[in-house]
View 1 (cartoon, chains in turn cyan, purple):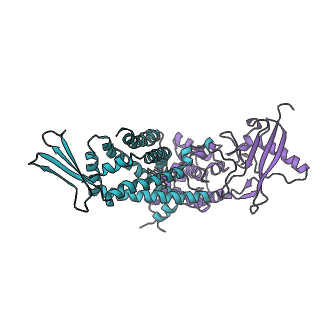
View 2 (cartoon, chains in turn orange, cyan; view 1 turned 60 degrees about the horizontal axis):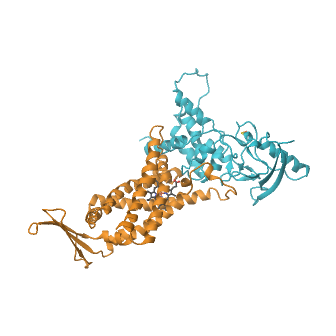
View 3 (cartoon, protein in one colour; view 1 turned 60 degrees about the vertical axis):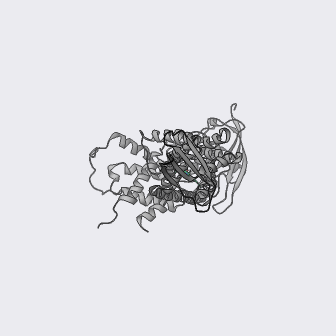
Length: 261
Length: 256
Ligand code: HEM
Ligand code: FES
């Protein structure tokens, strides 16, 4: 075995994979959140649909997206491998176990929280990602007047085989800027009108908050990072940004659509 | 005597490693709150011996919190309800009259039960033998303070060196990970100049042995640090990881 193979098959190395993939997913969450904020705009989904096209077609982002899929797979697979090893390390458990006396609830339930996240990711990706790629989505056409950007004409174009493609151009005769895009926005709006779907989202975001409350700072420790001055910064970000703000804003999206749109 | 307590003990009894084992309930009446936990068990054992029953086996040696021999998982926590002490330093006043106390051995596949509450902790010795040493030539006694070492570094190394190998970290960890013990033993040498020669060989050998013994993988729950009778800190685990990754990914192991 080479030094690398040995390193990655050790208990420390397997956790290194969890940490690298987990922290990469955390980074992705920020980008994903900022992009999705377009859903709050009152523009019939124009910004969101343009953004969706960009994210699925801009080559560097495509490369990153493959890294992302791999990360999810590796994170989940290594979570399983590590959890199996850890349960084998103590086959006979304690009759009385007071974990709350010495560790946080999150840190003791990472596997369950992760499983909720995995279920969520599968549902989420099959509804939006798979739908966007192969689902036969309707298109939508936005004609924005060049003289008055407030004036937008919106035309819905039903799914029509492979006839329609994304386009963005200026129509000088009509004096408009035209955007024709897949209407992912409408899919989002429709799903976020279903109550149990909204509940699933909110639960998943709560689970994510708890997962990252332990996970974010733990990921840094797994890399060996520990510093009297900077570890508190990591803990602060883990608590406020990753386990409160990000999940709360994500959860606000379906709630906003459900109650106010 | 007034003020004495009557307790119910649920004790894990197991004849040997092959036996399945199970809990047996004992009455521990008239227990002084000033007894240590082990003295309380001594009394229970004396009463068992009088009845010609097999006494409860448990490990102990110094009974002053320095050897690390005593163990016992008491009411869901290693070394009982108090922090930063060993079981021999735990007093019965930490319990209340009429209480039921559940006593279990350390639970880990790497720590097989020998009998009752005594477990085999030689896995720790094998990890130490794999690299927890420095090689020094015999000869003249070197001058004291010949090698300057910053106070913070010396203190940190001494803190790591206070580990008494009791195994409470493994017992407390939901993953039965030995990371705190192993990293303390690595740190106490890696921090000091005398430990540099074997630093990267040591960390690799000791981690490999830790894995071979079947301990779990650390997930940073921090339970070990809280339960450690000597207050060994998690920093040691992170230091071990840095040295390990450094050794595996960046150090040259062969001449070329
Ligand atoms: C939104 C997606 C996810 C993110 C951002 C995320 C993030 C993280 C991070 C940063 C860690 C810390 C790594 C370490 O301690 O070294 C972690 C650990 C872990 N994750 Fe995830 N994770 C996600 C999804 C999942 C999924 C889908 C699963 C399970 C199928 C999962 C299971 C686990 C487990 C078991 C651990 C290790 C437990 C521990 O360190 O205590 N995670 N995750
Ligand atoms: S018997 Fe020595 S530390 Fe408890």
